[in-house]
Image 1 (cartoon, rainbow, N blue to C red):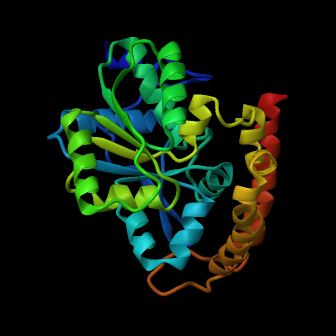
Image 2: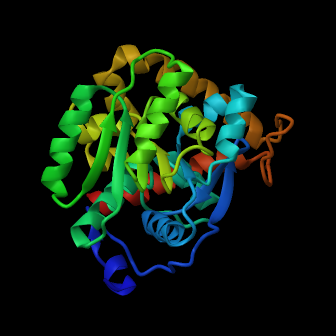
Amino acid sequence: MRDEELHERKWGSQTIPLVDSSLTVPGVYRICGVKLHAVQVEDLLAIVRRWMEDERTFHYVSSTNVNNVAIALESESYFDVMENADLSIPDGVPFLWYARWKGFPLRKRCGIEEFMEAVFELSNHGFTYTHYFYGNTPGVLANMKARLLERYPNLKIVGMYSPPFRPLSPEEDEEDIRMINDSGADFLWVSLGCPKQEKWLYDHRNALTAVVGGGAGAVFNFLSGDTFKAPDWVRYMGLEWILRLLVEPRRLFHRYCIKYPIFVFRFLKHSMGFRRVGHPMSSPSPLLSVLFLINAAGNMVDWMSDWF
Protein backbone atom coordinates (compact mmCIF):
# COMPACT_ATOMS: atom_id res chain seq x y z
CA MET A 1 0.00 0.00 0.00
CA ARG A 2 1.34 3.44 -0.90
CA ASP A 3 1.87 6.08 1.81
CA GLU A 4 -0.74 8.30 0.15
CA GLU A 5 -3.36 5.56 0.46
CA LEU A 6 -2.42 4.70 4.03
CA HIS A 7 -2.56 8.19 5.48
CA GLU A 8 -5.76 9.25 3.72
CA ARG A 9 -7.81 6.40 5.13
CA LYS A 10 -10.20 6.80 8.04
CA TRP A 11 -9.08 5.59 11.46
CA GLY A 12 -12.22 5.21 13.56
CA SER A 13 -14.07 8.51 13.47
CA GLN A 14 -11.18 10.58 12.14
CA THR A 15 -9.48 10.88 8.77
CA ILE A 16 -5.71 10.95 8.92
CA PRO A 17 -4.23 13.26 6.28
CA LEU A 18 -1.08 12.60 4.31
CA VAL A 19 1.93 12.95 6.62
CA ASP A 20 5.68 12.94 6.21
CA SER A 21 6.82 9.44 7.13
CA SER A 22 10.30 10.80 7.79
CA LEU A 23 9.05 12.66 10.89
CA THR A 24 11.19 11.54 13.82
CA VAL A 25 11.58 14.59 16.07
CA PRO A 26 8.22 16.12 17.04
CA GLY A 27 7.83 19.39 18.92
CA VAL A 28 8.13 19.38 22.71
CA TYR A 29 6.28 21.33 25.39
CA ARG A 30 6.18 20.91 29.16
CA ILE A 31 3.56 20.73 31.89
CA CYS A 32 5.15 21.68 35.23
CA GLY A 33 8.47 20.64 33.74
CA VAL A 34 7.28 17.23 32.53
CA LYS A 35 7.98 16.61 28.85
CA LEU A 36 5.23 16.05 26.31
CA HIS A 37 5.49 15.70 22.54
CA ALA A 38 3.18 17.76 20.35
CA VAL A 39 1.83 14.94 18.21
CA GLN A 40 -1.37 13.66 16.67
CA VAL A 41 -2.19 10.08 15.74
CA GLU A 42 -0.95 10.49 12.17
CA ASP A 43 2.39 11.71 13.51
CA LEU A 44 2.67 8.67 15.77
CA LEU A 45 2.01 6.31 12.87
CA ALA A 46 4.69 8.01 10.80
CA ILE A 47 7.23 7.87 13.62
CA VAL A 48 6.48 4.21 14.38
CA ARG A 49 6.78 3.26 10.72
CA ARG A 50 10.22 4.90 10.70
CA TRP A 51 11.20 2.94 13.81
CA MET A 52 10.10 -0.26 12.12
CA GLU A 53 12.26 0.51 9.11
CA ASP A 54 15.35 1.28 11.19
CA GLU A 55 17.48 -1.20 13.11
CA ARG A 56 15.29 -3.11 15.55
CA THR A 57 15.58 -1.38 18.94
CA PHE A 58 13.09 -0.86 21.74
CA HIS A 59 11.23 2.46 22.06
CA TYR A 60 9.21 3.35 25.14
CA VAL A 61 6.00 5.38 24.70
CA SER A 62 4.37 7.12 27.67
CA SER A 63 0.72 8.13 27.52
CA THR A 64 1.09 11.16 29.75
CA ASN A 65 -1.90 12.44 31.70
CA VAL A 66 -2.42 14.51 34.84
CA ASN A 67 -1.77 11.49 37.06
CA ASN A 68 1.63 10.90 35.44
CA VAL A 69 2.60 14.55 35.86
CA ALA A 70 1.42 14.65 39.47
CA ILE A 71 3.49 11.58 40.35
CA ALA A 72 6.52 12.97 38.50
CA LEU A 73 6.35 16.11 40.64
CA GLU A 74 6.57 13.94 43.76
CA SER A 75 9.23 11.50 42.59
CA GLU A 76 12.58 12.36 41.03
CA SER A 77 13.01 8.77 39.83
CA TYR A 78 9.62 8.80 38.11
CA PHE A 79 10.39 12.21 36.62
CA ASP A 80 13.44 10.56 35.02
CA VAL A 81 11.24 7.76 33.69
CA MET A 82 8.99 10.33 32.00
CA GLU A 83 11.89 12.45 30.78
CA ASN A 84 13.53 9.49 29.03
CA ALA A 85 10.45 8.29 27.16
CA ASP A 86 11.02 8.12 23.41
CA LEU A 87 7.54 9.55 23.01
CA SER A 88 5.45 11.26 25.68
CA ILE A 89 2.02 11.68 24.13
CA PRO A 90 -0.57 14.11 25.56
CA ASP A 91 -3.34 11.97 27.05
CA GLY A 92 -6.11 14.34 28.04
CA VAL A 93 -7.99 17.25 26.52
CA PRO A 94 -6.59 19.86 28.96
CA PHE A 95 -3.10 18.97 27.73
CA LEU A 96 -4.28 19.60 24.16
CA TRP A 97 -5.65 22.97 25.25
CA TYR A 98 -2.33 23.84 26.82
CA ALA A 99 -0.44 22.72 23.71
CA ARG A 100 -2.58 25.02 21.58
CA TRP A 101 -1.83 27.85 23.99
CA LYS A 102 1.87 27.11 23.51
CA GLY A 103 1.50 27.30 19.73
CA PHE A 104 1.00 23.65 18.74
CA PRO A 105 -2.23 23.13 16.74
CA LEU A 106 -3.33 19.85 18.34
CA ARG A 107 -7.00 19.28 17.56
CA LYS A 108 -7.66 15.61 18.26
CA ARG A 109 -7.21 13.40 21.29
CA CYS A 110 -3.97 11.45 21.07
CA GLY A 111 -3.72 9.19 24.09
CA ILE A 112 -2.60 5.58 24.13
CA GLU A 113 -6.11 4.36 23.27
CA GLU A 114 -6.28 6.39 20.07
CA PHE A 115 -2.75 5.30 19.19
CA MET A 116 -3.50 1.61 19.78
CA GLU A 117 -6.70 1.66 17.75
CA ALA A 118 -4.92 3.34 14.83
CA VAL A 119 -2.15 0.72 14.95
CA PHE A 120 -4.69 -2.10 15.16
CA GLU A 121 -6.53 -0.66 12.15
CA LEU A 122 -3.37 -1.10 10.10
CA SER A 123 -4.00 -4.85 10.23
CA ASN A 124 -7.14 -4.33 8.15
CA HIS A 125 -5.02 -2.78 5.40
CA GLY A 126 -2.30 -5.34 4.88
CA PHE A 127 0.14 -4.53 7.68
CA THR A 128 1.36 -7.58 9.61
CA TYR A 129 2.70 -6.04 12.82
CA THR A 130 2.52 -8.39 15.79
CA HIS A 131 1.25 -7.57 19.29
CA TYR A 132 1.81 -8.82 22.82
CA PHE A 133 -0.44 -7.82 25.74
CA TYR A 134 1.03 -7.93 29.23
CA GLY A 135 -0.77 -7.26 32.51
CA ASN A 136 -4.30 -6.83 33.86
CA THR A 137 -6.39 -9.96 34.56
CA PRO A 138 -6.92 -13.19 32.58
CA GLY A 139 -10.62 -12.35 32.18
CA VAL A 140 -9.95 -8.88 30.76
CA LEU A 141 -7.32 -10.29 28.41
CA ALA A 142 -9.67 -12.98 27.11
CA ASN A 143 -12.54 -10.54 26.55
CA MET A 144 -10.24 -8.02 24.92
CA LYS A 145 -8.84 -10.61 22.53
CA ALA A 146 -12.31 -11.69 21.42
CA ARG A 147 -13.48 -8.13 20.84
CA LEU A 148 -10.30 -7.07 19.06
CA LEU A 149 -10.39 -10.01 16.66
CA GLU A 150 -14.03 -9.28 15.91
CA ARG A 151 -13.16 -5.71 15.00
CA TYR A 152 -9.73 -6.42 13.50
CA PRO A 153 -9.89 -10.00 12.15
CA ASN A 154 -6.35 -9.81 10.71
CA LEU A 155 -4.76 -8.54 13.93
CA LYS A 156 -1.76 -10.72 14.82
CA ILE A 157 -1.78 -11.32 18.60
CA VAL A 158 1.30 -13.39 19.43
CA GLY A 159 0.86 -13.50 23.18
CA MET A 160 -1.04 -12.41 26.28
CA TYR A 161 -0.07 -12.85 29.90
CA SER A 162 -1.44 -11.72 33.25
CA PRO A 163 1.38 -11.78 35.84
CA PRO A 164 0.60 -12.31 39.54
CA PHE A 165 -0.58 -9.27 41.50
CA ARG A 166 2.52 -9.25 43.71
CA PRO A 167 6.20 -8.41 43.31
CA LEU A 168 7.84 -10.91 40.96
CA SER A 169 10.98 -12.79 41.85
CA PRO A 170 14.01 -12.11 39.63
CA GLU A 171 13.50 -15.53 38.07
CA GLU A 172 9.82 -14.83 37.29
CA ASP A 173 10.67 -11.43 35.87
CA GLU A 174 13.37 -12.89 33.65
CA GLU A 175 10.97 -15.58 32.43
CA ASP A 176 8.33 -12.99 31.53
CA ILE A 177 10.87 -11.03 29.48
CA ARG A 178 12.03 -14.20 27.75
CA MET A 179 8.42 -15.13 26.93
CA ILE A 180 7.71 -11.69 25.45
CA ASN A 181 10.91 -11.64 23.41
CA ASP A 182 10.41 -15.18 22.13
CA SER A 183 7.03 -14.15 20.74
CA GLY A 184 8.73 -11.81 18.27
CA ALA A 185 6.20 -9.06 19.01
CA ASP A 186 6.61 -5.71 17.29
CA PHE A 187 4.33 -3.95 19.79
CA LEU A 188 4.20 -4.60 23.53
CA TRP A 189 1.17 -3.18 25.34
CA VAL A 190 1.42 -3.14 29.14
CA SER A 191 -1.42 -2.74 31.64
CA LEU A 192 0.04 -2.67 35.15
CA GLY A 193 -1.37 0.67 36.30
CA CYS A 194 0.38 3.99 36.76
CA PRO A 195 3.21 4.41 37.77
CA LYS A 196 4.13 0.72 37.75
CA GLN A 197 3.75 0.17 34.01
CA GLU A 198 5.93 3.14 33.03
CA LYS A 199 8.62 2.08 35.49
CA TRP A 200 8.41 -1.51 34.23
CA LEU A 201 8.91 -0.46 30.61
CA TYR A 202 11.75 1.88 31.55
CA ASP A 203 13.52 -0.67 33.75
CA HIS A 204 13.34 -3.35 31.04
CA ARG A 205 14.09 -1.12 28.05
CA ASN A 206 17.49 -2.71 27.46
CA ALA A 207 16.17 -6.28 27.67
CA LEU A 208 13.07 -6.05 25.48
CA THR A 209 13.27 -6.75 21.75
CA ALA A 210 9.91 -5.32 20.66
CA VAL A 211 10.11 -2.11 18.65
CA VAL A 212 7.42 -0.24 20.59
CA GLY A 213 6.28 -0.58 24.20
CA GLY A 214 3.42 1.45 25.59
CA GLY A 215 1.69 1.69 28.96
CA ALA A 216 -2.02 1.14 28.35
CA GLY A 217 -3.50 1.01 31.86
CA ALA A 218 -7.30 0.99 31.83
CA VAL A 219 -7.42 0.87 28.02
CA PHE A 220 -7.36 -2.93 28.28
CA ASN A 221 -10.56 -2.68 30.32
CA PHE A 222 -12.20 -0.35 27.80
CA LEU A 223 -11.25 -2.55 24.85
CA SER A 224 -12.51 -5.66 26.64
CA GLY A 225 -15.86 -4.03 27.42
CA ASP A 226 -15.39 -4.69 31.14
CA THR A 227 -15.33 -0.97 31.99
CA PHE A 228 -17.75 1.70 30.81
CA LYS A 229 -16.27 4.15 28.31
CA ALA A 230 -17.48 7.74 28.16
CA PRO A 231 -19.07 8.96 24.90
CA ASP A 232 -16.72 10.79 22.56
CA TRP A 233 -18.41 14.17 23.05
CA VAL A 234 -17.88 13.91 26.82
CA ARG A 235 -14.22 12.99 26.34
CA TYR A 236 -13.58 15.87 23.96
CA MET A 237 -15.05 18.32 26.46
CA GLY A 238 -12.53 17.12 29.04
CA LEU A 239 -15.24 15.71 31.32
CA GLU A 240 -14.47 11.99 31.09
CA TRP A 241 -13.08 12.03 34.64
CA ILE A 242 -16.56 12.72 36.06
CA LEU A 243 -18.04 9.57 34.54
CA ARG A 244 -15.03 7.48 35.52
CA LEU A 245 -15.37 8.73 39.09
CA LEU A 246 -19.05 7.77 39.15
CA VAL A 247 -18.28 4.30 37.78
CA GLU A 248 -15.25 3.59 40.05
CA PRO A 249 -15.57 5.93 43.05
CA ARG A 250 -13.54 3.85 45.52
CA ARG A 251 -10.57 3.47 43.18
CA LEU A 252 -10.56 6.95 41.67
CA PHE A 253 -11.77 9.25 44.47
CA HIS A 254 -8.28 9.97 45.78
CA ARG A 255 -6.94 10.62 42.29
CA TYR A 256 -9.65 12.97 41.08
CA CYS A 257 -10.76 14.65 44.30
CA ILE A 258 -7.44 14.98 46.15
CA LYS A 259 -4.47 14.46 43.83
CA TYR A 260 -5.84 16.46 40.88
CA PRO A 261 -6.76 19.60 42.88
CA ILE A 262 -3.24 19.52 44.32
CA PHE A 263 -1.89 19.28 40.79
CA VAL A 264 -3.96 22.28 39.67
CA PHE A 265 -2.48 24.30 42.54
CA ARG A 266 1.03 23.23 41.56
CA PHE A 267 0.35 24.00 37.91
CA LEU A 268 -0.70 27.52 38.85
CA LYS A 269 2.38 27.88 41.03
CA HIS A 270 4.70 26.65 38.29
CA SER A 271 3.06 28.80 35.65
CA MET A 272 3.65 31.87 37.80
CA GLY A 273 7.35 31.13 37.94
CA PHE A 274 7.72 29.27 41.26
CA ARG A 275 9.55 26.29 39.79
CA ARG A 276 11.09 23.26 41.36
CA VAL A 277 14.84 23.01 40.83
CA GLY A 278 15.61 20.53 38.07
CA HIS A 279 12.09 20.69 36.60
CA PRO A 280 12.37 23.32 33.84
CA MET A 281 9.30 25.10 32.55
CA SER A 282 9.73 27.19 29.46
CA SER A 283 8.68 30.84 29.31
CA PRO A 284 6.75 31.18 32.58
CA SER A 285 4.44 34.19 32.85
CA PRO A 286 2.62 35.59 35.90
CA LEU A 287 -0.60 35.78 33.87
CA LEU A 288 -0.20 32.42 32.13
CA SER A 289 -2.51 30.44 34.42
CA VAL A 290 -5.41 32.92 34.12
CA LEU A 291 -4.99 33.27 30.37
CA PHE A 292 -4.75 29.49 29.99
CA LEU A 293 -8.07 29.02 31.78
CA ILE A 294 -9.69 31.58 29.49
CA ASN A 295 -8.16 29.85 26.48
CA ALA A 296 -9.33 26.44 27.76
CA ALA A 297 -12.90 27.74 28.05
CA GLY A 298 -12.71 28.99 24.48
CA ASN A 299 -11.37 25.65 23.30
CA MET A 300 -14.21 23.82 25.05
CA VAL A 301 -16.77 25.96 23.25
CA ASP A 302 -14.89 25.41 20.00
CA TRP A 303 -14.89 21.63 20.41
CA MET A 304 -18.55 21.60 21.47
CA SER A 305 -19.43 23.31 18.21
CA ASP A 306 -17.87 20.38 16.36
CA TRP A 307 -20.24 17.96 18.09
CA PHE A 308 -23.54 19.83 18.34
